[in-house]
Length: 213
Image 1 (cartoon, one colour):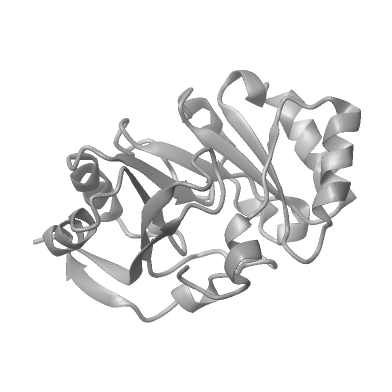
Image 2 (cartoon, helix red, strand yellow):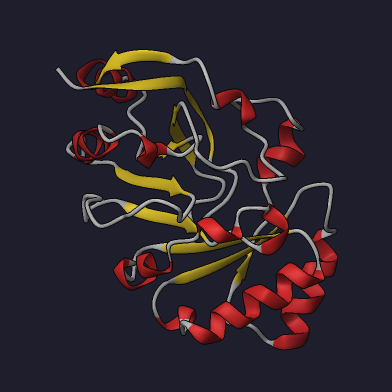
C-alpha cells in the first residue's frame, strides 16, 4: 500500500490564497529540497511519520471539511503525493496543493487547485523555478509571489508581464511577514494598478508563529 511521510494533519482556518478564512484540513508532508530564506515551516524538513494513504484519507474525512490543503515542505518531492491528492479529491471536497514551483506539476490530478510559487531573488531559490510549469496552470489555479523587498516586487512585475500571468490564472502577491510592511506592498500594487490580489497570512495575526494552527 502506498505511503506518504506526514509531519502533521490539523484543522484550522486557511490563512491565505483564494479560500482565506475558510475552515480547512491541512495535510503537511515532510521534506523539501528548497531552503528559502523566509521559510516558516523548517520543522517539516525532517522527521515525520510514514502513513498509508488510506489511513491519511480516513483521518481527513473525519473533519467533514469542504476544503483540504496539501502542503509542506514540498509535497511533490514525494512521488506518492499524486496518489494522495487523487484519493483526497475522491472525498468530494475542494483540494488544493501548495507547491514551490520547483517540481513538475504535469501529473497533478486536474481536480486539484494548484497554488504555485515563483521564487523571488530574495528567497535565495530563484534558480529552482521551473518556468515551463506556468503553461500547465489552469484557470482555477493560483500563482503566488512571496515578496521580501522592492527588488522582489519589481522582479515579480516583470514576470507578470513576461508570462501574461493575470490572463492565465489568479496571481497573489504576499509580503514576507515581519520583513515587508503589508501597507508598503499595498501602496505599490495600487500605484501600479496591478491585476493581482494582495494577501497577508492571517494565521500569523491570529496565532503568531504558533505552528500547525
